[in-house]
Image (cartoon, rainbow, N blue to C red; front, side, top):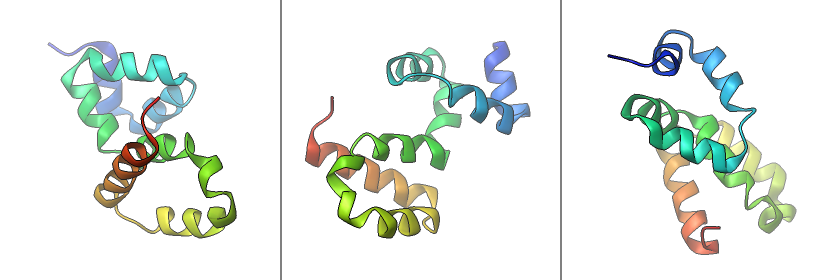
Length: 93
């Protein structure tokens, strides 16, 4: 049986994205770990990986515009790989 949030995430992805955008990083991490469905929905969305990259935004100031263009035109799987690599390089908080 699905929880209400899992159902919302599957039936109304834009509403889910808007709700998740209001969560702080710690709450988002806890939310991601609550259920398999919400985890799968989150990790398959580009906005989730862009949010991780934004944590390291200060390290890319001089390339900010280039990064924005690259990320916007890149498929989710590649953005995920980039986010994981950046997080590993700079160390997770």
